[in-house]
Image (cartoon, rainbow, N blue to C red; front, side):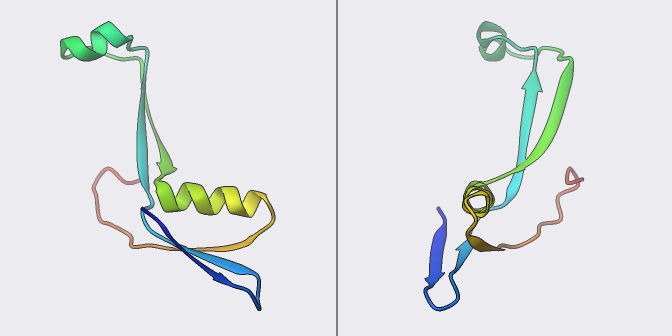
Length: 78
């Protein structure tokens, strides 16, 4: 869940919430996914999370946007 704060005087939206890494695994069909372990050709990590995605969308519409979150220390982070 994300929280939006809109400052009408400065036209800025502050988005507070999750920014995380989405892990995308390719070349695995639905049947294989539910059957257990399987080798894959590719594993990719992309920035994601509700607040990050929403702030990016707002910024693409020209809204002055600020993302407020916490950085973690996960070993998987790039």
